Length: 114
Image: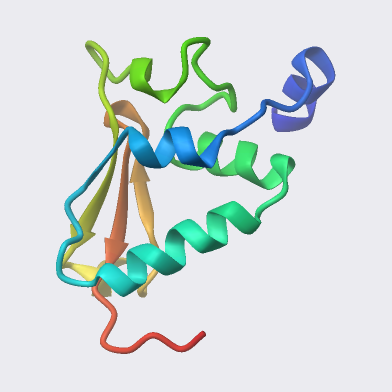
């Protein structure tokens, strides 16, 4: 699906500053993890940023025309949200996503090794 979409509409220009400015961060406990998350996302090329959008925000990898401030959720405009997932053992410590309400669930990590 992703490759067909790229053939039809090409890669989107994912502006990480715009996404970050329009994000609700509920992961207040570990600010360091959020810093690493944004650093990693900035390091992605446009193809991997599009795949990230496809995973966490919307099934298609497009950026809203007026930017992430107008990102649609299930019923209305809904910001991207980073959520602290306390049930980290369910996913073996992997992030999960809820595309219907633009939420990335980051597990609680005891240590960060980067």
